[in-house]
Image (cartoon, rainbow, N blue to C red):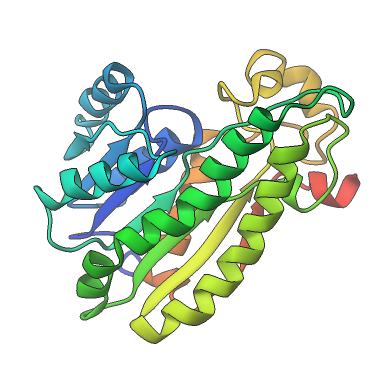
Length: 255
């Protein structure tokens, strides 16, 4: 059973790994035995700081990059290639949100969010396909897209581009999974609910109030997210293709 959920000897790259859900996943991967976890974030200082902190759990390397642009994607790929020739696990977690009323919602609030949340996961995976394929020659490589329950059910907040991008990412996960299965690369997604993060400040700053709307009676904690990601990344998740694992304490059923 330990082997079933072990990540021993594997390498992982987590975008948006300096904080929030990305950090939870990176820490979980290290605890599950990853040989090396690489984290990326736009702010180099924050990325370096988190990597240094997580290094107490194992080898964690900071690769700062702005993956919202094609040049930033390529820079991350080049930086990773200096360390590794194969990639066992890619977690497309970097994301952004924008909330504004329908009447004033700006085009920049659409492009920024959709480009990072939906476009980047596709093109970063595409740019890393060769190291993923090399890893998949011996056992399935994994791509895990971090979606959101806002892509499944409707949040009352006016986050139009965020909801659309996450719904699109769930469908993109299905489409990518069917194609990349031929390369022994398993693509899946996680749709988190309320977890304390800079993006979800309600859960971070008002967790007790947010918990009242969650059937589980609490917001998510680090191990909830780490456990879901480890399951999909390990041999236990090899047969889960194109599916989105909802980790939300029951919120989507209660809305």
